[in-house]
Image 1 (cartoon, rainbow, N blue to C red):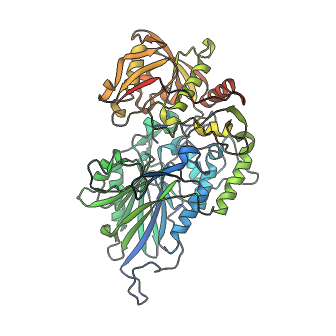
Image 2: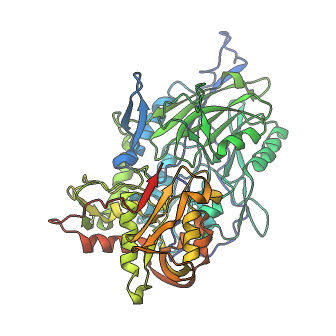
Image 3: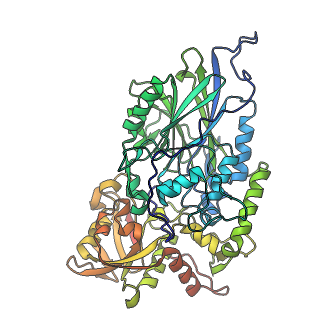
Length: 601
């Protein structure tokens, strides 16, 4: 979801000038004309054409089906019960998209950002080249950038677009040079500080037999708050509404009247089921979150909004500024869902007939045939990754839920925080007395069932990497007790008031979270204890956290005020060391209890 730190490899290069980057031009699908025109029956194209828009978002390099609860979607049954359906994996996504395109000569495929970044080892180990290659194979026509596209900085994003081997690690396959994306990445609201120019194309126009649809791509304006500083160095992020409206006007002037906005920002539907009727009239129904106000502010020139970032599935109508309903969609995450939208294009006005726009989300089910080309792609990269990915790191007795847990305190969050505290408590390693982990940085569950040939209960390097794929360096800093209390209050106030971000805390720290209260009051200050003792506002504490939090990320300004910083090992190294020290095949690690935060609801 939001709020995820970012890969901070020592190999990252200094941001280079990225003005005027070239991208693939407008993409033209060569298919027979008129096959889906609403025909007059006399061989002449009719006035309207149905254009199929297929879309998805937040793939995050999940080429293989995601494991555990991260690989399921909720589906409401006819009797009102909710069923969990296994979904996702590019072998199935490819089949779903190819099946959907059949009989639709006017079909365009678009994405809402975060295609890469926070990726499992199979893609992350190779700087997400495997995912770009897979997206090329899926015939993706266009995508917006998301916040994660900036995880390794604008220079690396430019390489993913334009091709070329990694500047430090080189080419991964002998005799093969990375070709880059054959679809344009759109970044209309991201400019260079020095020149004011967009770092990538702001929009592209898809054309087919005289039918023209413009796509404008933006990421959330708040990207700098959820990516570490190195990733966004030298860049400026602008207001989503103003940017989309500016380029919609420009497209309109160029005669492009049909426009789709790809926006890496989203909302929360009232139900987590992908097939929820978002427009049902019941009290509390519909959608909330940042995308609602954005949708209400975007010019009526834009005909549909493809969104993302919140990892939710929804198909909703939100009124545009003139009061007319307009489709706003999102397709969950990790390739588990895709959206199929019908846009009726009027050849005379060159615009979309908004009243006939239809849209639905569909599960990428795993009971369909796998796409052979994607199976081969996964096998090829798995062969390269295997020597590293399959190494055992430790043993667990049951699933330890992180991403899949909806509770404020997550078993895997406690395990990660404990690993960080243990690794950084020795005096020569920083002398930490407490550790904090941001919830958005936990990217999956630790799953008991074997992912390969390692056997049940064995945690491999690949599985540990999938949980913490950012290779964030750990920091230990001095904070006062007062700053510690403020940081805990910032979980539920300020920019986190509407959508709390509950830090995962190491053992020894306890407090009460009273959700019946509002804002900072939800953290009951006089219940905060460290090893049984009340926090002394004037005392100095050594606090361990990843560099993202130590930079004040996720709205935790108080954590960014630390002094006497010591940089330690990476989060992943500490996690793996803890697994090795605390588990054997005969004595596996059990899921930690979640009894550090007392919740009042």
